[in-house]
Image 1 (cartoon, rainbow, N blue to C red):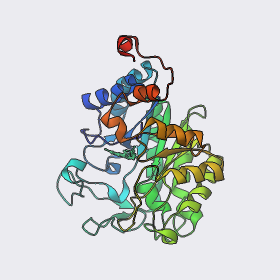
Image 2 (tube, helix red, strand yellow; image 1 turned 90 degrees about the vertical axis):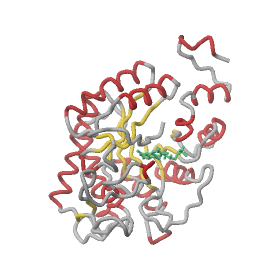
Image 3 (cartoon, helix red, strand yellow; image 1 turned 120 degrees about the vertical axis):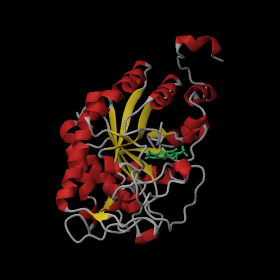
Image 4 (spheres, rainbow, N blue to C red; image 1 turned 135 degrees about the vertical axis):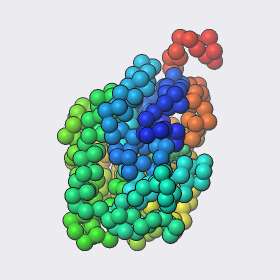
Length: 335
Ligand SMILES: Cc1cc2nc3c(=O)[nH]c(=O)nc-3n(C[C@H](O)[C@H](O)[C@H](O)COP(=O)(O)O)c2cc1C
C-alpha cells in the first residue's frame, strides 16, 4: 500500500480513523503498508492534520496500529517526511492551498527563498545549522519508528517536499555545499540516510521515494539523475527506490495514464542495479503482475485502488489464480 495522507490527525497524533483505515488493509491481505507521510517536526507537516512522530507521545500512539498490522501478517512501514516550502497548507478536501496566517499557519522552510506557488509565502532559506537540526530530527524519528515496532522506513524524497527541493535544480539556488552541483544537491538526502542508518538496523529495509523526473527536460531533474542517484543510494544501504515523479513545479506537462511512471522504475532497476518500486495508475492485478514479470520493477505500490477497496489484494489473488490463505473468520466467503 502506497503512503497516502489522511489529513485526520490532531497535533500529529493518530486516532481511531488511522487505526481502522490501516488495520482494515492488513486484514484485507496487503503485504506491506507504508503509512502516510509522517512529519519529523511540526513544521514539516503538509497540513495541521498530518501525522507526526516528533515526541515520545507519538511513539506510544502508533504501537496499537503497528502491533495489529503485524498480527495479521502484514509488514508495517512508515514514510518519514518534511514538507519544506509546501507545508502550512489546508487539508486536501478544503482545496489544499497554503494558509498565510492564523493558528494553522507557520513559516515554511526551503533550500532557497522560492515559493512553490506565487500566492505562497516566501520560505525561509535554511541555514546550515538548521539543515543539521532537520537531519537530526529524521534520526530521532527513525529511532521512534523502531521503538513503535515499524519494520520498514521509507524516506519521503519526492513530490516537491523538502528533500526533493534540495536535489532538484528548479528549487535549489544555494551557493554553499548544499547547492549547485549534483553532488551538492543530493547532500541533504545522503545526510538524512546516514542519520537514519545510525539507528535503523541493517536487517530492516530502508526505502527512498523519489520524484524520478520533474517532467521539465534538462531544465529540471530527470531520469539520468535518478539513475545516478540510485547507484549512490545502493552504496548507502538503501534497499529499494520507490519511483514516483513530479510535483516540484506547477509548469510541467505530465502524460498521466496507466503505467506512466513505470519507465522510471525500469531505468532505476535495470541501469542502477537496485530494487525499484513502481507506482501510479496501476489499478488491476494483471497490470501489476505484468510489470513484475517483465522485470521492470520489484514491487508494486497500490494507492487509490486500495482506498476504493480494502480487499483489493484478496480479489487480485483470485484474478491471478493464486492460492492465498484467508483469515479463518472470512473463509466461508472465499470463492
Ligand atoms: C489521498 C492521497 C494521499 C497521498 N499522500 C501521499 C503521501 O503521504 N506520501 C506520498 O509519497 N504519496 C502520497 N500520495 C501519492 C500516492 O502514494 C501514489 O503515489 C499516487 O496516488 C499514485 O498511485 P495510484 O494511482 O495507485 O493512486 C497520495 C495520494 C493520494 C490519492
